[in-house]
Amino acid sequence: MVAVLCVGLTTVDVIQQVAEFPTPGDKVQSLGVHLATGGPAANAAATVAALGHRAVLLTAVGGDAFGSFAAAGLAERGVEFHDFAPDSRISLSMVAVRERDGERTVISRNAAEVDLQATVDAVTPFVFQADVLLLDGHLGQLALAAAIVAKDAGLPVVLDAGSWKPVLEDLLPLVDVAACSSAFGPTEDELHARGVPLVIRTNGANPVTWSCDGEFHERPVPAVEVRDTNGAGDVWHGALTVALARHDPIADAVGWANAVAAVRVRNTAQDWLEELARWQDSR
Image 1 (spheres, one colour):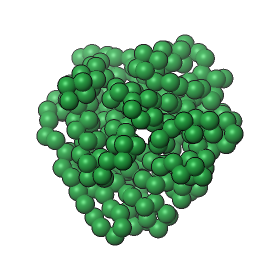
Image 2 (image 1 turned 30 degrees about the vertical axis):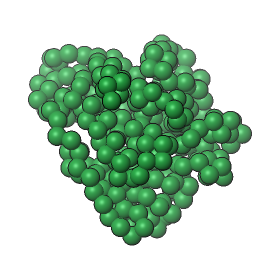
Image 3 (image 1 turned 120 degrees about the vertical axis):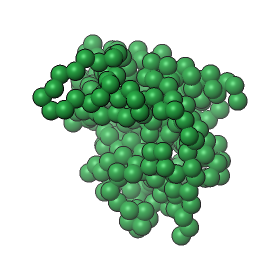
């Protein structure tokens, strides 16, 4: 068993399944609705736990009714979490998932209103108990403090780079692995120039690519019937981080993450965690 420390966003997701996305001004009736704990770091931590490993999450939850719902969801998923903004309000995400292909669209406040005070001393005990650190770039002050401690301790730092955030100016030189979405702006060469040794890029159903030591590689993703892509990248990052903590070769780590993410996308928001745990037990 490995221990993964995740730092970043927790949300409450309101997920509506629709036949088609509405056009501006339209009202549509959904085919189903589901309320769930979400967020990049939280979903990654849930993935780590479902795969049978220790998942610790440093995040912002808050104490209102939605925060209590998220806290219960994290506990139910086997995630050990620590709230660094107990007086804040958790972010709500409105998610629409299109039934015919699992494509999703998301509206969220993310961490725009979170006020937290994070210090190096506060995060040090958690970093020292971990085998690897995964950051989603949200809660920038907390992410930076954890990365500073991890770098000094020689702990691998993995960044889930979905979109550019101001903290990345300071964070990237501390990152060992930048696992980027296809929409993430800086190129591989630009990220290497900022000090990131390994840059990986996901691109939906297209092959995952990576570059390191001046070489470029790729690995295809499994072909599956897609039902729901919401959070697939979060799941992929959680699985990748587990593989890196086990010191898997990078090609094997990417292949493992691809396989785990395939379990996510072929299941719905209601059942993916149960199916992932069942898949892991069957291996």
